Structures are given as C-alpha cells and as structure tokens.
Image (cartoon, helix red, strand yellow):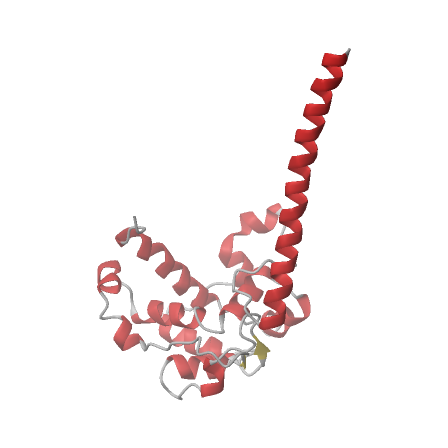
Length: 211
C-alpha cells in the first residue's frame, strides 16, 4: 500500500508541475501582450479575435471570397486604391498606430507623394518604416530570378506597409462593419491580392532559408 501511495504521490507531483509550468506560460504570454499594447510594439502577426469561414467558403476558393482580378493588373491595383469603394477611408494600423488611407498608401508606394515623417515613426518616435521604390527593388537579384513583374513588386511593397491591415481585413471579413465599407461597395482588392499571391508563390522557388 505504501509503495502505491508513494507512486501516486510522485505521479501527482509530475502532473501538478507540468500544469504549473503551463499556467506560467499563459501568464507570461498575457503580460507580454499587455506590454505590447502599452508600448505599441505589437506585430502584424499578433493574435487577435477574428471570424472563421465555413467549409463552403473554403471550397469557393480565393476568387469566390474576394472576386476576380482585373486582367490588366497595374490598372486594377491602381483603381482598387484610388477609385473604388473605401479608397479614401481612414484606418489605423494595429502595430505602429499609423492612420492613413488606401489612396495615400498607393501614392506613397508609387512615388506620387512623399511619406510624412510622422508615418515613419512608432509611438516612441523610433523610425520603423523604410520605403523602397519598385524601380529599385526590381534590380535585386531575387526579383530578377523570380521573374517578378512590376505590379507584383508593388503589391508586396503595399502589403509590407500599412495596407496589410486592409488586406487582412478583406480576407478575414472581420471586423464585419469595417469589411462592409470595402466589400459592400464592390472592392475586395482582388487584383492586388492576386498579384501578392503570385509574388509569394514565385519568391520561394528561387530562395533558400538561411542555414
């Protein structure tokens, strides 16, 4: 009987120790998230509440979700950011708290206007945004080997700036009220997202992860 009790005690101790480690992990994660919220250091990949689609939504495919792209890609990307629904709607990014619009971001990415200094800083006034033009990026070896088109590079430039907030919103359809401001007016940024998906598919074919 004593041996059985001792064995049970050891097993119970192991279970409680693992549970305690798990709880500590949760507490550490919660505290880290609170620090991010306090100092504005949250990332584009931060965990947030969002909606989930159905199995039918999965089988619809990406175009069933956002619409078909304009076969004239450069023209379609420009129209989605400067002419279509939501192009002048202000939004604020979740990471560096930059307030901007799709039209403004398109103009900055294409060199039509300079990026305001304030939009290149985080809340602690640290410079966190580096802008590179399509003409400069397309000379990079990876872009040449991947065969990226100018419009594909532009889509990547836009996504790696504040526009990630809008594109993710469109794909998630969440928050619903924000989503309707774009999609309700017929703008799901399908041409931009198709160009982005194409670039993302091409680049891994000519690159290798670092050792």
